[in-house]
Length: 395
Image (spheres, rainbow, N blue to C red):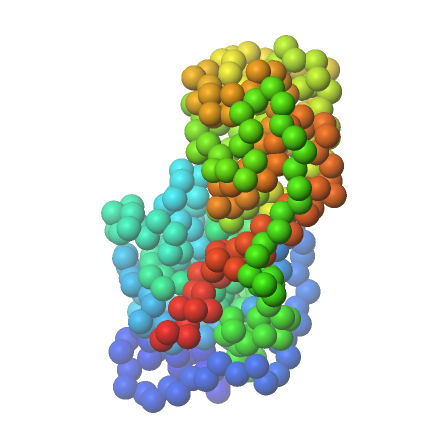
């Protein structure tokens, strides 16, 4: 039987073979096409990150040797015998917060269910890399830290934990998989997988070049945000540094704000206009799910807010809710009435301020678009990649 290029790469990468691999990532052929049951995909992934992951499906997994200078194995570096004949599930994660730390433990538990047919390998992204070894060195599954971000860029891993499934022939079969469905899709893919050739996976530069740069720099280098209306009843923070995002407790999941526009709304359960405005704020969050984080902050206690949330007669929140009885952010904003909101770009500058009811979708769209340009102009993460173009030019 013909040995696939992937098998050769795995052997050379993991057992120190002296084979001259000469692996070249070339975008010559179109990827293989597969039909994937939607139930196997993780519907919690942001759409932009899902699209990035999908770019790898149907290509051959390049193996680990190509990233020998990028990946540092923290725990249980696998050898060829552990990989041979098994499906590989790559699970990205980070230790940046509790929710994303828990992904590693979940992968460890799932690995035991599919041990004979699949091997789970966790990849820690460059985010919060300094905590990776301390957290994962006793893991029961293989864990590698991507110190440069090059592996994560090529595989399409960004901030949200995601899983990539590689079949026994070395072809990337599924990206953005729901690993909780592993007990179902692993046997299915295991039986279907056959040796065969898939085209080499183009690196991130080649893929970006094909689809164009995601956020072009403004021609004159100046990013223009929409003009904000005059502020009354509060400190005027327009075009100034806003308060740090400080709350006593998140009632819902703590949001990921890096590279995103952040809207902070001050509200209370007793405030009629605040309650009436919830559907409008929901609509803003829905319109920009990948680019905007809305945080509603009340100075009431947790019990009062949860009582409100459990009341079926009240509108349902579809954005982040937090409490801060100490009024730390409110103290900086100095608002003398509610509802009141501030909208900050990813660099922490207030771009809009006032009554949330007067913040239109078109204005928010202009802020989001300008923030993308801001990320590109400053080398920020608007392009969803760990290795920036300037960093590569200097190599």
